[in-house]
Structure formats: C-alpha cells, structure tokens
Image (cartoon, rainbow, N blue to C red; front, side):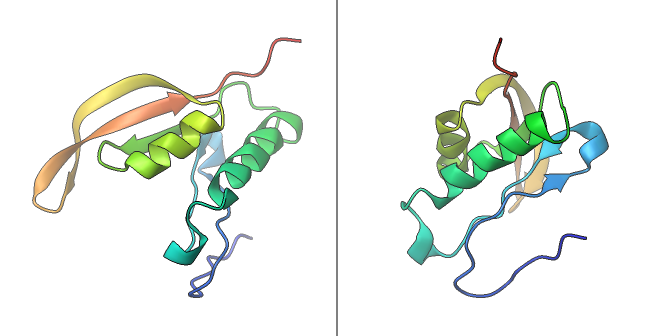
Length: 108
C-alpha cells in the first residue's frame, strides 16, 4: 500500500490515483528539490510503469490552470493537452480551469 511521505526533504514520487480510471498523480518535493529534474524523472518512470507493468492504453493527468510548473513537467514527459474543463474546481475563492493531459503509447 502506498504511504505518503511528508518529510521536509521528500523526493517527488508518482503514485497512480484510482488506477481503474487510469489517472496519474505526482507529489512534488520541497522547494530545494525544484529544478533538478526529479519531477520529470518521476513522470517518465510513472509512464513506463503504466505501459509496461499495468498495460494501460492511455494514462491521463489533470492540472489546475495556474499550476504552470506541473504543466511544464508533464509536457516535458511527453503528455499533451487534450481538453480544458472550464471552472472545474473551486479553489481559493475562485473557480479554476482543469487541464486534462494524455500520453499515448508509442507506436511500435
């Protein structure tokens, strides 16, 4: 069973959230680990696991519109924007758009 790691110097890791829906999630580490490629590496490992171990066809991930760093990390890992869901979440006294990203299995 996956256990969250709330230590101050946690390295990011990428569990699958509700695997039946094939949605992925990434927990990012503290600010001192930003910009070192840990998140991009976690996204690549997660994608490899989705394809090779779980045999998923189309993993997805959602990002809030203002989370630019997370969006850039997923785009760098090969995800592409499939849909924008306007006003999907209520956060900090305003509605936020949700961006749905997908990554397709490479054609062999």
